[in-house]
Image (cartoon, rainbow, N blue to C red):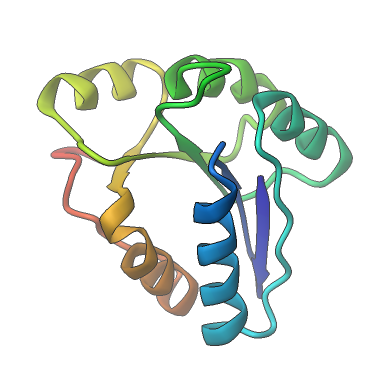
Length: 136
């Protein structure tokens, strides 16, 4: 899990792929050098991070992890971060996934291929539109 802090933005990212995390971490430190980064590779690490640090404004969760499904992880984390906006990251968003994500309390789905652009918009402007969810 990561914590990206820039101004009043505080973003956590949970992903089981250390190479993906390293790539995003390098990008964040290069483009947004004042941003602080934390990471964890498991849902248990995400839960520990939420208990140790203030509730983030955004929590990005990978859909496919060996330990758990991202939708189930969001349901587990929501009581610990009731004011956070949950964003699901996945390689292949689908209409069926959008409905399941809404039911889990996820406001946005972002393709892993669009994540860097999405984070850049979010960090620069305070909002971003990945264009994947039909309704906010």
